[in-house]
Image (tube, rainbow, N blue to C red; front, side, top):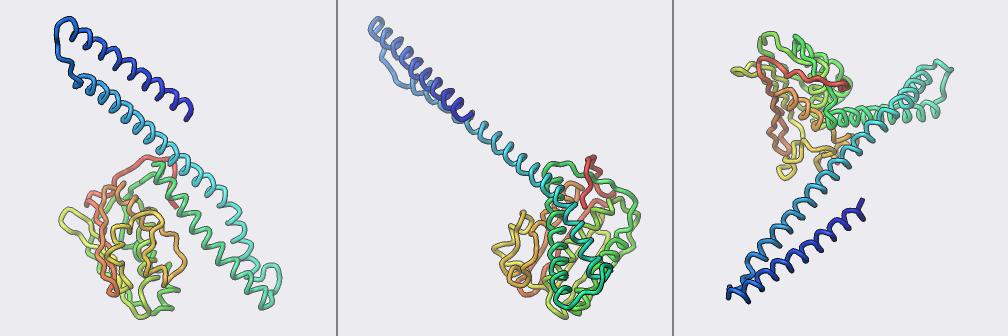
Length: 308
């Protein structure tokens, strides 16, 4: 492909040389026969026009190649992640069986090794699921299926699923829920939104810290606020918060585990749904994420895959 493009460019260059020679010959002839002053401006204009055309064509070709490469990368990630799901599930399942004594009693050393395998497998499952979600978002194949939903119950369910770490760190959870009318939302996607933001708040808030969840009606908008008293996000890195694989320097030191994909997924879901997300953060004081949807609910999106 590259050789073909090079030959194509060479033909154009030769064509330019011939064209310039012809134009110059005509003007030279006119100068001899009619005493017309030969001006280089028309020749320069022709050369410039052809060069601009060639440059634009190369830019378009490069953009197409870049899109094709990105699409191929996304397809590969999707395929690889899908193929990893089955073996990881098997490892996780059998590790759990062994830990519960289904295959006999374990000694202390065996249990230690198995617990390491189990924890590592769970981390890999989280990563693979996140990669699958990202590939479905990038390919645009995921669906949004709104239905009448109680957002407050989804928030409560997520909070109930995260108690081990909250209890260990003795975090104080405060909830402020307005009386919200029936809201049309995809319950699965709303759960993903709450899981990602709340799990970050819990991980990066120190012992005895505070987490506040607010769900309120704000004019023609439904607003969700999740506020914590955690480590905050450095000002110079705040513009990258919703980028893929981003993790702030200060949280890397606190928590080595993390995919850096959660907030990218959250923002994509909210954007596709017709909502908006932003945040305010102070280092050492905490972060507040604000999410707004039209009171009419999330936009429907037809797709072949569900995010998990």
